[in-house]
Image 1 (tube, one colour):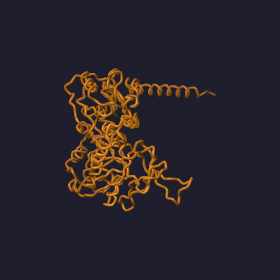
Image 2 (cartoon, rainbow, N blue to C red):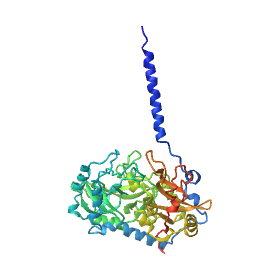
Image 3 (cartoon, rainbow, N blue to C red):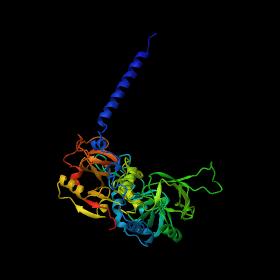
Image 4 (cartoon, helix red, strand yellow):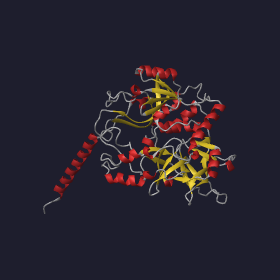
Length: 468
């Protein structure tokens, strides 16, 4: 009888060879990027750059610290003093028009149909703006969008800065417990146009709840806690009848550095290992109620935290290596929200975007200087961990000195590259919070010298807005 297995074996072997060859060819098209040298040579630890003589010295007097905290409270709770929106519908109309264009793309990299934009325009109902006017609070960490949808709006995926992660509909992440003013509701009532003290956008109505005068009085006038550990769990406080060694305490939310939460005045002097706080949640009626909750004492501190170089460095290390998130996409941080959240526990209320942050304190123009002169000016005039460095579109923090050169702490997507193919054309991706020099990637074989270094683009430095 003729053996028919050998031809089948040969066929399988040939198929396997072709499959492996295809996989190798695919790897050749998308090679793993070589990391930049700074990340291997510089300590990714902000405490490594501190001066031991001043690391634990307070930067501000107690009087200055109280003044700063008071200014923070005024700005943070400002939405609850509004009776009308600070913006017009025309602020959001351009994004709805852009959604109608043929060259906007979805998460599948395919063009969005015009009907997608038409549906958004109908639901936004801006012709009747403003159709609401009430104070509210976030009851979950959420996103402020430029369109009333969670779906992304990308530009051309083949061009640098236009595909992932640059969702043109994303504006900002907003943490739980943030005061809001609600100016408008979508036609289906599932989205609200809101504003915080810093930023405006569309938020799902499931992530907010209206507040009454009693809650506003308690929250705005109460003692606050500043979160100092990112992603720390917040738990519901167990009732006395249920407290036991085996009782389960339900999880409520994740605390984020940058949050300020209301301390429970009924348990302010409790000596246990957890802070007692009041967390806003949405009750069945849709309105906000303050729910007793707990957070480990290692994860928060009475607001404001004392501003010392060590405290800034220790808090900044919480962010080290965290993924980049354009406009807070996926509740990650971008360059400006990294600094915003870093300094919030100290009572420093920074604006939301990099340009506004650069203008928030005393600005020194460096744009006319050579790259070497820019570094020299920073070394002479900059205060480590208290000076921001601005390049149009990007904000950084002067971290200190390494081998005679300034180093910076920042969250960055990437460096201009020369490669035209792969998942991130034209970018050497860093994609996280790092410490680098002002010339990261200069040695990289794909570095785009014609695009210039980060240092060449620096236009100035800004002292943090601190009281005199």
